[in-house]
Length: 280
Figure 1 (cartoon, rainbow, N blue to C red):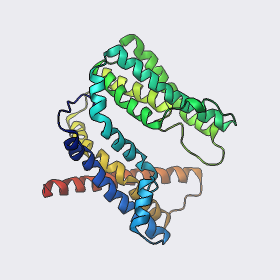
Figure 2: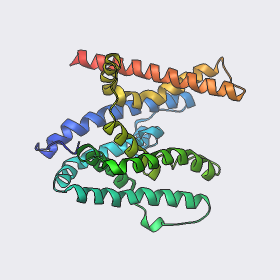
Figure 3: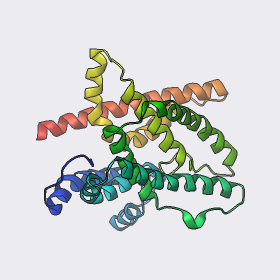
Figure 4: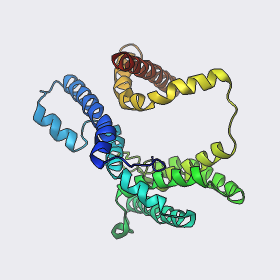
């Protein structure tokens, strides 16, 4: 997004980019809202929907959409800024903003142990999200020097191992997944390592896999938006005839639930995309 030129007027940019995100977001939020109201046997009102929508109280995974829309509002300005930064300046900016991820992680771990630390130095989450744009731009255009890659891979593997371990150690009563969110340090390091690996050691996929990836790539957004609703419906249906009682049964239940959710979400997203093409 940062690498593209944005010469169009800002009003046209909003209409061509932001509205294409906002309209489907409102529609799918309404679907979730109505479904949850039906499940809980509560009334549906426009005022209640708008209030919950404005406060990100429809569904937990929609945080991503609020962040994306806010970032899109800033894209034309961020793109101009990045175009005037050289490689070292951009790297310095990324490292400074990555400090926010580190502070968020340290603050959360310390608070789980009853210690308030670095709370006055925390960054707004939006800055951490924007940093992924800067990081992606840097990795795509400049990459990581060969002699640094093994250290990046090591840090990425270490992050993947430590995230669930630290998550378990810091849980008190309710899981918040604070170490897995985009504002934490672990996902930032792990994503850097993964991108660098696939960028520097591309896999020669067979033609059938390449066709599948070309088919699936445009569907990722739709799959993400609907998968929670699909998962809830599938889980409710499974529990009508299958109540796992042991660890192995629970593992099997999770595999079936995950697989069915992925397949059904993919098929629904494919159908919606096909209908959209017919309409256009």
